[in-house]
Amino acid sequence: MQTTELDPTLSNTLDNARKPGLTLVIGNKNISSWSMRPWVAAVAFNIPFTEVRLLLDQPDTAAKIASYSHAGRVPVLLAGEMTIWDSLAICEYLAEQFPDKHLWPQDVAARAMARSIVCEMHSGFAALRNDMSMNIQAKLPGRGRTPDAQADIGRICEIWEDCLARFGHRGFLFGEFSLADAFYAPVVMRFRTYGVALAPALQAYCDRMLAHPAVARWVNEAMQETDPTPLHDADLPRA
Image (cartoon, rainbow, N blue to C red):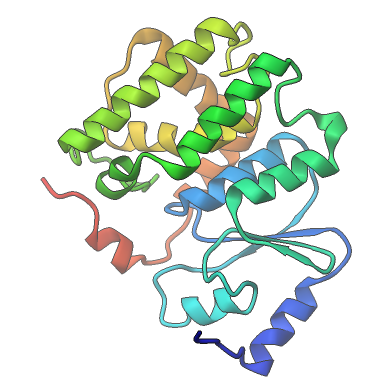
C-alpha cells in the first residue's frame, strides 16, 4: 500500500486551521458542487464556521488539499481534532451536533425519504455530473443532453414531484428547508446553466431555491470569482 507523507510546511496549515469552532475547506464556488452542499447547509441553519477556499485546477491544488485531508478532495470539515472529508458525512455530523436546528425533517416518514433521496443524489446521477458539470457563471442551454443525462433529469424530476406533493406544503422538498434541499442545490444550478425546461411546479421550486438566502449568497459569491479553471472548462459540453 502506497502512503504519502505530507510536507511539514503543509502540515502546519492543518495545525493552524485547528482552532476552536468549525473550519470548512471548500473549492471554487463556481464549480465545486460537492463543496456547495455542506456550505449551503451550514449557512442556511446559522451554524458558524470559518471558510477556507482552495482554488481548483491549479498546479498546487493537490498539495493544498492534502494538507487538510489524505482523501485529496474537498469539502473537508475540521472540528477540533477531527477531520471529516465527505459532504454527506459532514452534513450528518452537523445534524448530530446541532439537533435543535432540525437539519433533517422531524417527521419520521419524511426523514426516511429525505435520507433516501440524499443518498441517491450522493451516490448516483453520474451522467448528469459528467455531461452537465456545474458552472454557475456559464450559460449552455441545450448542451450535455446525452441519453443517460436525460434519464437522470427525468429521475430527479420524479423525486422532486413526489417530495413536493407529499411533504412540500411550505415550498421546499419536505416543507421547511432541509439537508435534502442543500444536496439538490447543485442540480438547481445545473438546470439553470443548461436551460432545462421543467414543469411549472418544479420550476417554481427551483426559483424558491435560488431565492433562499444561503443559496443566493453562494451564487452571488460564485459569480464574482475570476479564478481560471482550465481543466473544468475543457470538460464543458460544446455546441
